[in-house]
Image 1 (spheres, helix red, strand yellow):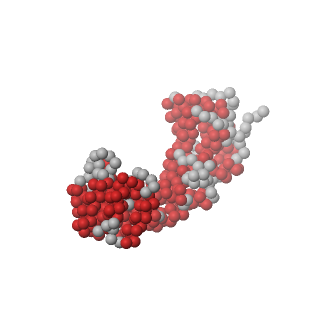
Image 2: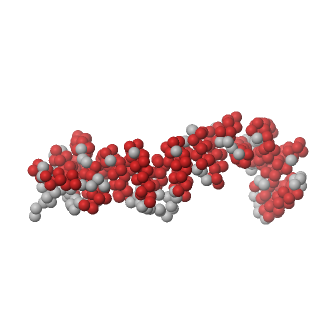
Image 3: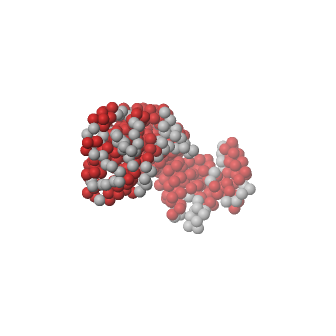
Amino acid sequence: MKTIAIVTLGIAALCVGISSLGFNSQKPSVTKQEEEKPKLSSTRKSSSSSVVADHQTTEKKPKASSDWKMTARNLKSPNNAERLKQQISEMSDIELCKALDELASLRLSNDATRQLREMLHHALVAKKPEMALDQFMKETGGTLSSCPALAAFENFLKQDSAAATAWLDRNIAADAFPEPLNGFNVMLAELEKRLIIPLVKTNPAEAARRLNAMRASNKSFIIDKVLEEIVGDKAAFASFVRSTVPEDERQHQINDFIDDQIDGDFSKVNDYLEHFDATLQERTNFLETMTSRAFYDIGDKRMVTREDFENHRKWIQSVEPSLVNKATGIAIARSISTDSTGMTFNQAAAIAMEYHASGGGDDVLIPLLQSHPARWRKDVRESVLKIAAQISHEQTRQELLSNLKSSREMEY
């Protein structure tokens, strides 16, 4: 029976390399006369640049697995691998796609075969990133990301960002990225991340539009990645948070960003708050959060002292004077520790009452009454009731007592 008259495009090119490397097969190899047939040349000229169209119009069978196995096996030799790499670099983009399809159809699975596929993928990414992306989508079904696929998209963005964006939007519209049970498509998220991060600085409005249009699970992932990428750029970070991050997540991002940036140096806080043009509510929330974190950390290491409270009051006074007493109450409540070296509830209560007597008002006492020990520990009930009796605002006092009463059935 006569062998196939026209070999597939990818194999035709590789067989020249295989022959030159000294690879032998039990099946007839492609002769020089067959290589020079006009029919092969015309087939190449008429091949479509589209991966899908190319597969629809070609009716050729893949080469026998023996040649592929021989090629992969000979990759163990550095010299042979280099020569084959050169041969692959001379293949056209369509030939590379064909070779990948044929190699995949044989279901070979070993390190050498994977190396051969990587060589083909690498060459296709460098030659035609859009076609490489189509090839990856076909191979993975749009569910798995890989370094070559992401490299292809990055190359595509560099060559023609508009075309790369259009490619991604086209595939999204065609539901080419399936939604898993957890709703998080890794490949789509990684591609979107690479598109959006540059947009945050060059076109923040478009970055916000893309983020607001995507799936919630992917959106959360990308927001985190974008924030990590631009964390050193205060202007870009502030703009992104304001225009893109959902309102219910915004405060958390502002708090964590400033906390990370100041690295314990509270003298920098006011500068960051002003840079964010923080509202009074945002400033208050941030300062309360930082107070809670700071005194929890101190109390976890050693006994909190009166000097610690005084120093913190001075700092709060310089940033947001209206918050001094409330911040003091939060600091006292967070200083309570069950450790023998820490501050007891009764010690904290005594300090709170002193600040209250010196004009601290209800703000100093309320955080202590809302603390976990006050609500759940029966052994401090008497102290709690004495503190509650000092709350001047009737409605606030009744609400606190009601909450305390409902918690009394359980112990700390």
